[in-house]
Length: 126
Image (cartoon, rainbow, N blue to C red; front, top):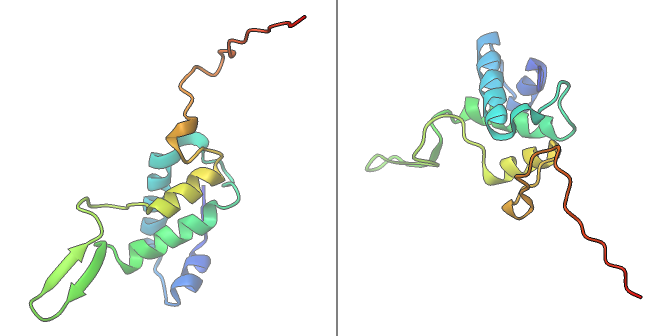
C-alpha cells in the first residue's frame, strides 16, 4: 500500500529526497497508522488519509528526534514526548480515525461482538 508518492513528499519538503529516506518515512508512517487504526486502513487508502500521512512523514524527516524547543546558550533541548519513535498528534489521530470511519471519542465505544443484535423491547400503548 502506498499512502503517498516520493514526488509528493519531495514537493512538500521542497528538497531532494533519496529513495531510502522516502521508504523509511513511508514505512514508519504506515506502521504508526496500523498501530492506531489496524486493518481499517484500506488499499487504496480512504479519502483524508493522505494528508495526515504526508504530514507525519514530513515531520519524521525534518524533526526525527521530536524536538519541541531548542536553546543555544546553556544547551537546553526539550522534546515533544518522553517516548521515542513516530508519534501522532491528537489532531492527526482524530483526522486519521475519522477518515477510516472510527469514532474519535470513547463515548461511542461498542464492545459487543459484530454478530450480536441489540436487545430491544417493544411496548404497545392502548
